[in-house]
Image 1 (tube, rainbow, N blue to C red):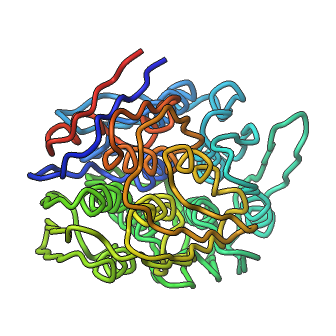
Image 2 (cartoon, rainbow, N blue to C red):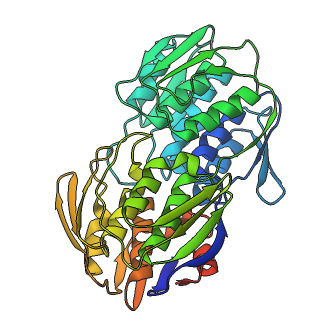
Length: 418
């Protein structure tokens, strides 16, 4: 199993391109299940989670064809197996995103309850309740969700909590439903908007994406084919900015946008970084030492939970103390123990962490526990004295395309070892 070996102490500098967003690509890939014609996608990142999703829809009968360097052509006209089996779903929670489209398109779906990262409970009840409100009959038995509906009916759905995948699943289900569906307390994330834009290009009737009330007027026939470019990955963008900030670096990220990152960029400025951006790039120049910044995670447009671990890492070497409050997941401080192995000063109290910056971290062997925890360990390794060996980096490969190569391009001393 691959490990990542990092020789710390080198400021990041130079330019690197950001990949397409995993969290936008996964639901958009599922959107092909709603179409009677091929869907052409570009800027699709090469990640393990993407490969898993493509294998999942392929075994359902979807034709998956590469198209150029970062493109795919997805044709669901051969769909004949509306099942998502446990052995494919267990590694990736986003597999639940096939549920809504399958019921809407095929009238039936059998989807294993998902697995994925161990960062806390992420229940699928909101998906199930929403589909039931639209008339689906649902049984949960033997670890599978079995949903049936001759045709879904438009409904008013008020989710008990803000859920990104729940909003996406129900939005996809509603595009072929009979009548209007309104999703209230909807997630506002840019990835939800990207999915909506793709569905609209395919002929769906959607308004309000990006607000907390999304309206979908169902159409009579399967959606048409379309061409869509996946949005840039805002979390990858933020991760590289944090890595440059922690190492007192100076980098320019291309093929990305500051439009989705207001809360993250604000915190980096508070830490002392200079930032500049244009339509498709962001430049960061870091001070010799950062100032500690406190963060509180919350649904978009507030500070993202997927950037919490990275900011904990930069606070480890910043001047002063800062608090980090995690409000989304109850078990998302597992990286703190590994950062402490590198010499960090972190005190955890339930969903709160107090981080006091130290002058130096020291390299050691550490273990990644989830995707974003992995990123925090990479950042810490880049600033630590000596060598840091990160184990279980398959988590990294789920969400960061060629991270070792991109960091090397920015001057880091990073290599994969076994």
